[in-house]
Amino acid sequence: MRARRFLAQLGVELTLTARRGESLVLTILIPVVLLAFLAEVHLLPTGPGKPVSFLAPGILALAVMSTAFTNLAIATGFERGYGFLKRLGATPLGRPALLAAKLAAVLAIEVVQVLVLVAVALGLGWSPVGGEAPAALGVVLLATAGFGGLGLLFAGTLRPEVNLAAANGVWLVLLLVSGMLAPLRRFPGWLAGIARVLPSAALADGLHRTLSLGSSVPTWAWVVLAVWALAAPLAAAATFRWE
Image (cartoon, rainbow, N blue to C red; front, side, top):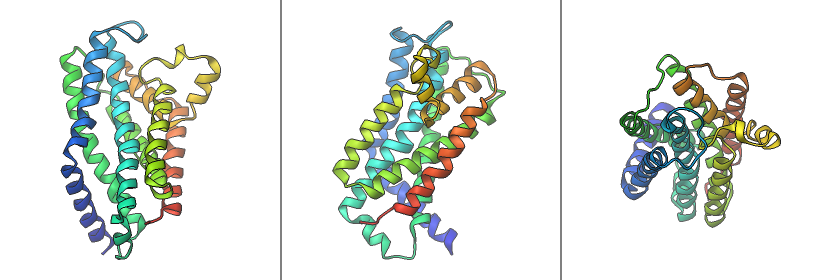
């Protein structure tokens, strides 16, 4: 019965996502434009080698963070503000099934993003290392759970207008202190230390190492991602309000 409720709600989430076509286009288009522009116009200190070698994993990380955190937080926050979630609260669905369905829908969007971004990056000359792909997948899954839980925590506790501002503000901070667009080694020591406890930096470093360097994910990144993947969804489930 619980699985049936989850699948039914997942279908609803995917339908709603498809209806937000403009949001879906931006979710995919903006990372593609950023990747193509930054790879060809050398504005960022990406280190030796082709800029796309550093930028491709970084933009993939940015796409995951934007979809799992910002887009999910804002969309769910407005659903709550419009009273849509209040009606769901009167059904047997329950908070865990709702949150799980939303995270599953995020994963579906991420699959499309990854396929498009990898195709564009290959066209720009990226040569990914395939041997660590399973580790890269694990990093993305943990990051999606962590960012998704954080987004749902915002959406389930803040008023829609406050949530909109907070989600965008936190997204900007996470982007700047992440290593997605510039290597962490170029950060001041104190700032790099702060970055290493954030899921954005752990995700970016994990994807850079696995997809462009062919090395393993560092232990600190696994620990940070695992903690956020566990703590954020639990916090969201415990505090989420239907209205």
